[in-house]
Amino acid sequence: DTEVTQTPKHLVMGMTNKKSLKCEQHMGHRAMYWYKQKAKKPPELMFVYSYEKLSINESVPSRFSPECPNSSLLNLHLHALQPEDSALYLCASSQAGTQREKLFFGSGTQLSVL
Amino acid sequence: QQQVKQSPQSLIVQKGGISIINCAYENTAFDYFPWYQQFPGKGPALLIAIRPDVSEKKEGRFTISFNKSAKQFSLHIMDSQPGDSATYFCAVFNQAGTALIFGKGTTLSVSS
Image 1 (cartoon, helix red, strand yellow):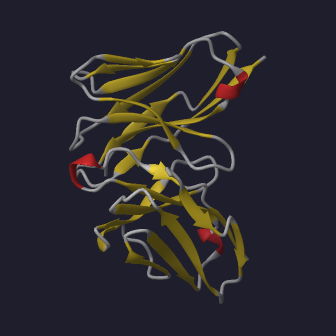
Image 2 (cartoon, chains in turn yellow, blue):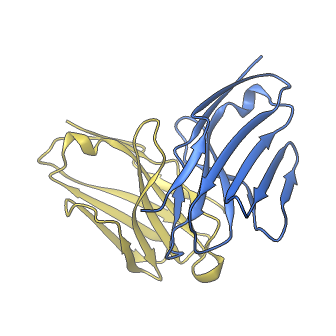
Image 3 (cartoon, rainbow over the protein chains, first blue to last red):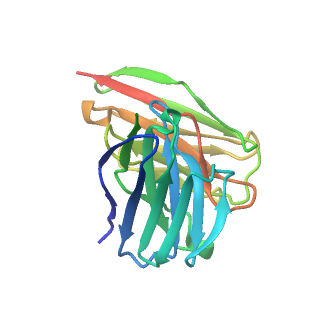
């Protein structure tokens, strides 16, 4: 199984809502990532978890809160988002350590903030 | 801030033609240079990658050429097909070696 599964595929939320994005992989990868992608732009790194610990936070606003409950799951909790946060949110996973070159991406959650 | 410069921004090629996309980088922690392919509504997928112990790597119709002294690498798609129409991203590791940083992308359209 070489899949990274993201749910939901689409999400519409108001600026006062709280929602969560979920990501799951069963490849035994110990590094997991959240990227944000605006239309016609490259993916931009948000967070990196390595062995279930947050190792990188690319100065992401606190209205985005990541969580890695176990080695297969990655969540992104959303609260009080702004319309400019509307984007495709991509989860990815890879081997950790020296084998982390190959990223496997999910299909993303298309988020619209009204 | 890590810089990865990718060109061209968009490319239109006739079916059967050669598509060439270029990438230039500054510094990177790891000598590993991938190209990712992304179709609309999907996440990027690894297409081909090279380590600079070789200057060229070929997988089917896709070839990476690497020039270490110039800090450049390029993707060549031979016999381009309409199914190759997608956005292509080059990537390099950041200076800490902890994550991939992507170029701005090239939208390829192959006309039949």
